[in-house]
Length: 133
Image 1: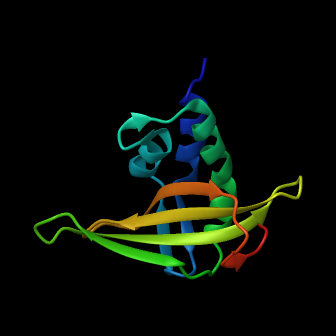
Image 2: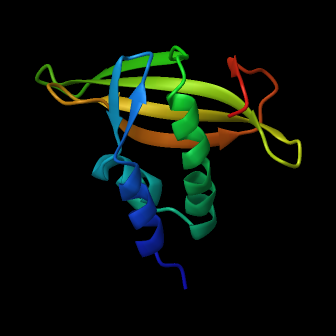
């Protein structure tokens, strides 16, 4: 049976990563952990969770490089509660030579620090930031 305890312990060890682009630390807290576990409140399948968690190490290394975000989005949740989303898209290659696009999303709520929010893996033939960690 799938147990999240080991993965949660590993995730909590990350705590924060310094981003040269923002010139500040990006926090790894409960919001990012919950998003790894669930999508819109529905638990992710074990295979999807494990695939995303596997990418965390790569994503953290790339976040520590001075790449600009490839996407920026600001959502208004009403009453002037604006939440900002910064997406970083990277190319990476597996040991088997397979290339993927890795999208890491950083979120910032009003008057809060930037924090890790999401990680997505997709095959893609065009890459924004081409570097292998």
